[in-house]
Amino acid sequence: MSREDTALQVRNESRPDRVHLRDLTLDELQGFVRSYDLPDYRYRQIASWLYDKQVGDFAEMTDLPLALRDRLGQDASVAALHTRTMQISALDGTKKFLFELGDGNLIESVLMRHDRRITFCVSSQVGCPLDCVFCQTGKGVFGRNLTAGEIIDQISALKKTCADDVDKVNVVFMGMGEPMLNLPHVARAIQIMNDPAGFDMGSRRITVSTVGHPRRMRQLADMSLRCSMALSLNATTDSQRGRLMPAVSSYTVTELIDAARYFAEKSGRRVTLEYVLLKGLNTSIADAKRLGKLSRKGPFKINLIPYNAGRDTAYETLSEDEIQEFIRGILPYASSVTVRRSKGPDIDAACGQLWTKSLLSRKKPARAVSPPGDTAL
Ligand code: SF4
Image (cartoon, rainbow, N blue to C red):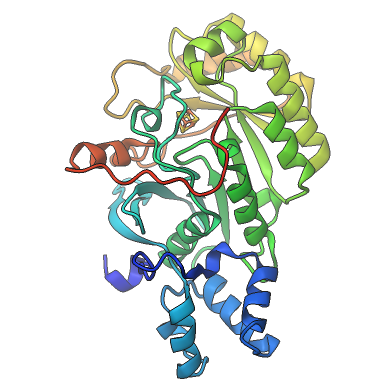
């Protein structure tokens, strides 16, 4: 992997006083450029370098005068992460990235290919303060919330690795972290993704996946951003959810379903109910029936996720026949059931695998400094 292909260079790790331009909404970027007494076409040029061409250095903005590039370089930066490791699946081309942030913290992102369509799975936090029993990320040490610029940087870095044969890019917040615990930065990043002068992405192409925080799910709905939602339900009763996802057991299944319905009604988009299949824990025929019935409580669709064990042998997923039997239990009640097939089975592609492996090999922990944002439940 060449440096030029993959790296967004860290420009400001020793100068935290610099503005990170991908942290700014497009209106703020325009205001920033105007503060230099520059005409608006300079703003359009810079936005195009940031969001069409994914540059990682002012030196690459070759249609700007050299003096302006130098001056911008004094006051601002255009990237806040660089690639530490990349793995490529020989089986399906999935790419898994370990990015290093300006403060030394590490995060994961994944690029998955489906013919001419690409999905970027991005992180919203360094680690995760929740501890869902089936998730590697929750087993590591939580660091901090990511800034909007660090979220956008992941997308820029991943876009930079795509060839021209890509028709569509989707972004899913299904990497490290719980997006509802970092809502201000996640919402700002979605605003930048939505903006025609940013990534110009609509609601079909952005999915926020949450384990569920009813109040913040409603807040996100009320922001009228263009995005879809996936509720990582994984259980059909409160007690079952308490065992699998103890950190969020204070919210009942009913409260979560109500909040998901509110989001669906506000956004006009069906919400996906995600369900990780953990053999013997949430996969009985009674579970299938309850899941089917829950899916009728709003404009929902069900996405079953066979558990990706990775190095973790504590849990098992279902065989193909057992998955089909589970689906037969759901179908009398549900209008839509899909199964997500695992990508990158030959690399550390399950959420948190590469990151936890890198933490184990690390001598010193990174600094844990949080930018503004409320991580308390
Ligand atoms: S599943 Fe999501 S919310 Fe749960 S520990 Fe993993 S990253 Fe955090």
